[in-house]
Figure 1 (cartoon, rainbow, N blue to C red):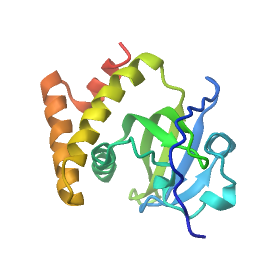
Figure 2 (cartoon, rainbow, N blue to C red):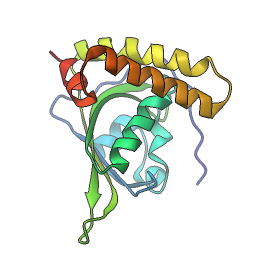
Figure 3 (cartoon, helix red, strand yellow):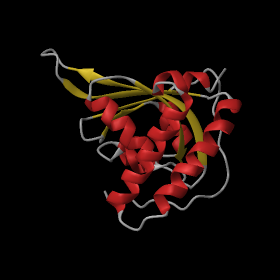
Figure 4 (tube, rainbow, N blue to C red):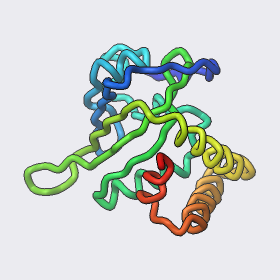
Length: 176
């Protein structure tokens, strides 16, 4: 099934505090499992998401450099926490606080990824929106996609360096 990315609607969706969005992917990021909360908030049927790249819910306001950082962290077989804006099937957006971890097989090798997403507190989202806007602006200054990614990643690392904190510490400090 071919996937057609919607245009952003500008409307924000919300989900209940007690709900947890869960999805699993293979090592290439293709969805192998999505719970009912995922399907409900994203507006898809299970048959529409299984086998599709998880990036199908990527909102265009989400900097590519943040995802590069996430994939680099996962490739190092480490967990990562991140604030992410996703896009539903109809173009609505929704913010999540994501926890993504590698899934390991019996032989100890990564076989996929597991992500739990919860409702984020509004204060960190407000702070991260400014950071993401700056990263996105830096990425968009360049026409070459490789250069976009390099420039955005360099700004992300410079931003972290300016805080004097490691990435995880910085993410958790946003809620303080």
